[in-house]
Length: 283
Image (cartoon, rainbow, N blue to C red; front, top):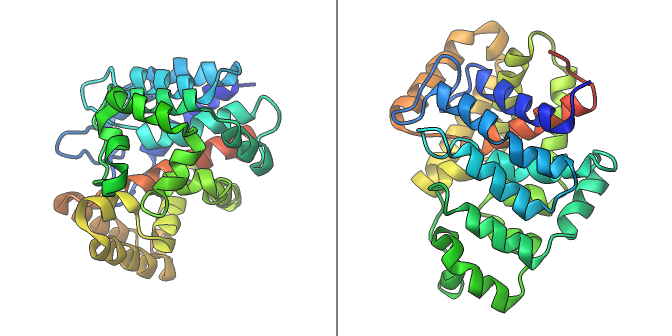
């Protein structure tokens, strides 16, 4: 039986192996500066931080260590958002991997966890939007330089996540009890076929439901809505089974245009971890 940290690493590997995942790196597609092997190395590098979470370490330091390990590969940011979901979920396995326990884990985060979260930004560049003027001192892009402001305001990591909604759907998962992550796990369990194929299918259904916040941050809400509308057309047509070529073409088009629904991929990875831990899927 695999440990929770092993399942979290496996979830990251299975997520990037799924294809086609429109706009994202998968085993058939690279982006201009991010390649498939960078994601494989990032998943392996994150393992030590995931082990800390499984052993009961605080969420913030475990997350920082996971990001630091992820960042040792040459591609840059591969799985920052996925790790921000996985670390508290792995920590929840100390009791039970359920939504109530995961919610309790994030409620118990501290100012120290928030400080470690900011230090994680020292290890890698992350695509985030400009904060409101009143939040400038808390701009995550300042990394550890923003820690004094975090400590002065006494903000816990959950409180920081609450301030990031609605513009960041990874933060929304923290605030909403990881609802889409658990729903993704159920869909993975109910789907048929090899796990990479299930992963691609669930990714597309998630993308069809909500505009991806990474796309919205980088390219605007209109572009994010257009991507979701196209995904919804393909899901309605059951294209993954009846017209896989249409999904492949959509995937190539998004890569060519630089539209990367990375937040949807993060939630897919979290769903994979939950499904693996619950024994609902098994490679």
